Length: 511
Ligand SMILES: [Ca+2]
Ligand SMILES: [Ca+2]
Image 1 (tube, rainbow, N blue to C red):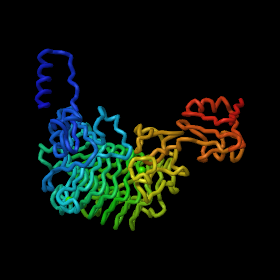
Image 2: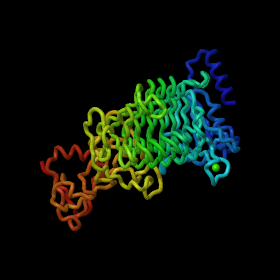
Image 3: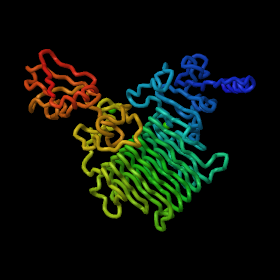
């Protein structure tokens, strides 16, 4: 109906030659649906099993708004039914159900709209959807933003193309598909969590650009965790074999606790036989991924052969910047394993301790750090609040971390994984989380009266921009602060949120 209306409107526009631009339509979806269930507003939202219908009904430029809750690909038992994105359609999740635009979403506890493959018996996973999302024929105008993608289960033998590949998101850009299916599949995935998926290869995400195809998605601010590959590529698998391309770009992504029974717990990159699998990682953390055989974190493989043997004629050159590779485990190449390919890294924090030759970095190592990144708590992805994408997440940086301000600005996006400003302080931090100073910096005067000495502050750090500063009175902090380089500090003071002087406290300013 809406579709027809817009077609009519478009026709009228042409006939009347008016400089009229039709507003893009928003289609609304909630779990229960509401009112007329025609998607025209939150009060008339489509219901759970109309989500794909809404996506299919949209026309170029439209958006889909989906409220919190669980959405499955089908109400039936057919495991082959999946969600699918579309070009020039923006699909936004994580609305409470009153918002008018994506910017009003809070993400106070990570994404709250869940695309779940848990169909059939809800207590078992082996009967779930093979792929929660099955994409084809997409460029990066196709956007998915604000979703959890979970519970896909594709245990099928990967002898046949697409079977057993990518249970969370399968990006099908293989050149072997019929032309109607396209040979490009490079969508944009943003603010998403891909978890608890199971497949033979690429359990979380499989980017299939095999044989003259291209599957090179952009992932911004995503978490990929607890995915299991019964063979290889627990978190992500990039398959560019035979003149294909599978070269995703990941910005501010956390890839942790994924598992592979053979190779590459975190990410497989295979660009053999003239193909390309050149993943670009900016401000990403790969940690605690495990592979039983080799490549706990990442494999760079450009072997021409299925068994990984020479010759090597393609490209699997992975480039890391402002990123962390730490605590991944495998008998060989715990952080990364080179099978003909390369890994290069600058301004990154990589555990090289058990990286025996030839599994070494290529090229410049400018700005790299080899010591422990000091995560808040690497045993707890969510932290105490039990929410992802918040300041207490376990893979955020501890105040003592050498990764704070250790990155180089440039290819950073403006918001970090917890919706904080991406650059706080002198320069960007390593990994997906920008270190956020506690709201208030309290003067202690523990050492002396100098404003510019970290030991005089709690937490022990000189106040920076975006911070509240509180100065207790002299009974609590006998050494009241003195600012010496007034012309310098005043410029900084201008940036403080509040400088709060308690009763009878003093702040002395000296030129
Ligand atoms: Ca089930
Ligand atoms: Ca948290």
